[in-house]
Amino acid sequence: MSTPGRSDQRSPARRVPRTDAVLAAEELAGPQQRLGSPLVKEAVVAAQQRVRAGEVAPEDVVAEVLAALPGSASSLRPVLNATGVLLHTNLGRAALSRAAVEALAAAAGTTDVELDLSTGARGRRGRDAMAALAAAVPDAGGVHVVNNGAAALALAATALAAGREVVVSRGEMVEIGDGFRLPDLITSTGARLREVGTTNRTAPADYADALGPETGMVLKVHPSNFVVQGFTADVDVAGLSRVVDDAAERLGRRVPVVVDTGSGLLAPHPLLPGEPDAASALRAGADLVTSSGDKLLGGPQAGLLLGRAELVGQLRRHPLARAMRVDKLVLAALEATLRGPAAPVRAALETPVEQVRARAEAVAAALVAEGHDARVVASDAAVGGGGAPGLALPSAAVSLPAGAAAALRAGSPPVVARVEAGRCLLDLRSLAPEDDDALRAAVLRALRAGAPSPGAEG
Ligand SMILES: *Cc1c(COP(=O)(O)O)cnc(C)c1O
Figure 1 (cartoon, protein in one colour):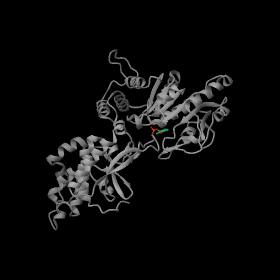
Figure 2 (cartoon, rainbow, N blue to C red):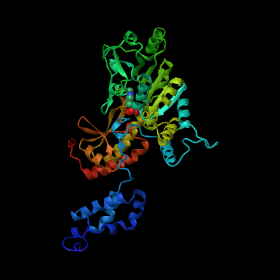
Figure 3 (cartoon, protein in one colour):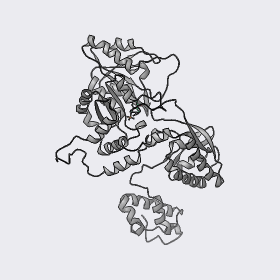
């Protein structure tokens, strides 16, 4: 707080405008309405501190506040993803399509998510999103959606195997990222792990030998962020289906085969030959498929359960399902992703490399015209985020001095690049083409402000 009695003495830095006077400025009325008073007040207090420190002239306080105000009441900042990693976990993985963003905004108020408007009676929650998902995967007799891929797997393990065994290959006991270890998730549900085979090789007989009265389910997990090469063998979904069929007579039931495909790919994709998809797994005999609703599907964070109708129904009615229920925003964005135009991740994946290179050339030319050290280089982009491990996507990048990376991250909007072999690479494949202008402007601003010294990036 300023103290009016003293504020006009000594240096100009001490003439700190009063908080209420600044807040009453006409220019700040709109922001206070949009962002709420506390956020604006925070910015005023920060600006007053800069006046005290002599960094801002007292008459510039309102301009300083306006410049410092966040774009929204959330402090999550939109960033430009020039890493070349299409699904970057630290950047929130999949970017939603415009159609999904609009659907999400439209659903944000009160909606008919659980009401049948024609009868006025209660309707099935998210009926249309479920119908869109069922239409996208005709091989699934039943579909359900929960909060994320991990929740889908936890629900399956709980409902099918709590107090019993989950048979899984030692080669598929994976850590997905951020310390999420699949074996820990499974055992947290009260199911016991029955590990079979070895890290590099697992055979049908390994599964067959483990099946017994205690078996709740057989699980196949896609090792979505690494590849094992060399002397390896695993059992595909069709093979697992044969194993449980062969054991059915002995056990008096067919043990369900659950496949965690991870990536949200619903059908095979020609550019991703090694990536498992839901339709193929179901056709090969999987009883249930779990996956993320974002990643390669490009929707909101969600967990998909696809499979035999009675099995999915059993999961949907399980008490734990209520604790994993998705909200109307997710349902709206998921439906729009499934019905609407291709998600940005799909466009990024499918763009021919010549187009990516032409965009990189245009950005580089604008930087060179301003005297910057920029050139276009070939680059390997990646799917990332738990999909298509080891697959290099041919791409093109604008190469800058390595020191630019920190300045770019500090810019507005922040640009996240990749530092490789002593250069800062702006890979255009992970950036939507409509963001090219924003990228060029942000880079020019950041390079002007940052005056990078090569090699300064830590
Ligand atoms: C990503 C992934 C998960 C977890 O999905 P979330 O949506 O992040 O919870 C589970 N299993 C596999 C194989 C994955 O790739």
